[in-house]
Image (cartoon, rainbow, N blue to C red; front, side, top):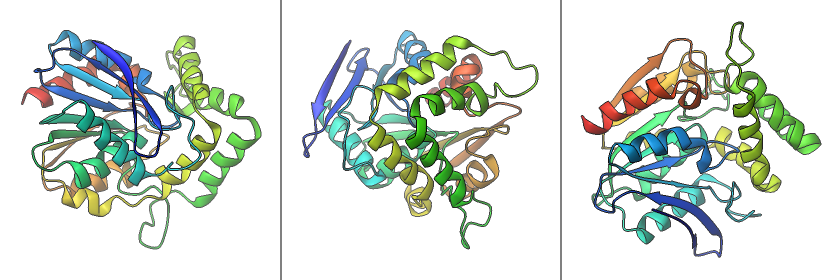
Length: 279
């Protein structure tokens, strides 16, 4: 069991955790914006205890990785994952991506996942095919939404990173929600560890990157998991479209569950992930 850093070709330090037997089935977890590998705590321990090798990294500009000025876009995110996979000799791995991490998984698997590197993938509350509204994507969110994210981040990142988890991210703004102050604080803690420039740039990366061709190119089985009360990445313009573009995709919709369902409903999500991994 270890946690360490790799240095990428452009000199960026990427923090990662790699726990469990080297010869066990490897599962790589890709976190969402603006968080870190710590967002997968409930999954990392669960699957470690079920005999898997579990790996998670902090995306460049996030968590303990370098606070990058450049390379804060999907091609580089995916290339960083490829460098990490090479460094720790991954093959036949399962890649699980949440939100922005789902975009990273789609691009990584499509561009770097050949030659037996990837066995399966999971897109959870994921941003593909593309979030931004356009003539080609009339059901998307308008640019003003993401401009609002950028403005809020630039004006008071600390308050913005409090408001997101306290409100829509975990569905804590819904009547009767079981609010966890610790979860809110942990989201804030993860977010504030990262670099504000990288977080600012990543808003464009997660909202404007078109993953349509990536999804079409993926041959391995993909589980698409999404809560139908996801207030961050609305299901109609994401999972419902992605599942149709994948050659070997399975859609699983979770009634009433929020964007951060891997935290709020870890027992349900972990059981379904385990069934997919072992199926």
